Length: 248
Ligand code: GEK
Image (cartoon, rainbow, N blue to C red; front, side, top):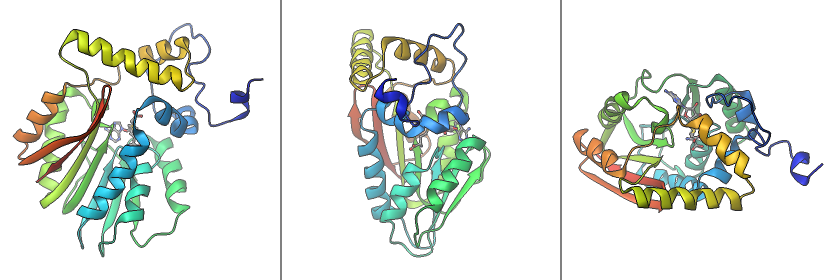
């Protein structure tokens, strides 16, 4: 048994050869290993979560809502709860995976806070949003059907109060084929350095390619402008992963 096998939360989902690799789903098996999977797969994930906390502390306003859309296990909500000092401010965390929502509730209930957090099982394309000072979409838009993305960003812009903050993090790809290949290679090196084998990298890629459709950075910026955001800037990029802030 390798040391890896003794840790139940280590992501080993694609470590054995699979005859047919099924499309990736946020199911019970993924929930078990999710914190390990996302940290070993997304460069800068911890920095992004910490910065979401910092930004929420700055932008959350009294008597408003804060949304965490596609919350998974609630890492962003937990970070925001630690920093928000605004009074009568509610965090609403939404995910359409029942398994994620159940585990997220356990994570959030483990910590006391003056900022309440409601965890909802729902589709972010359907859930109403209003009176928001901060909205977080951390690596979730890439799982939304491309033809529904503009409407979602418009709903987010409409839900924000003036001066409200939107934080968007995504995997992107570069329009230039040589740059695209280079960024992909650097990302694969990052995964190798974090202990993923060639087999795991290849099987995960084929599991995710029908489910996750990245955009180019310019599409994100254009969509934000069209939705009415007057200020937007990327604040983080590592390889083909980035995060931006947009202010209404
Ligand atoms: C984090 N934000 O740790 N409605 C609601 N949830 C959805 C939808 C939808 N239509 N589509 C996908 N999801 C998290 C990480 S993970 C990113 C986000 C990743 C949910 C899905 O169930 C999953 O939990 C999440 O979006 C994407 O800061 O794993 O790469």
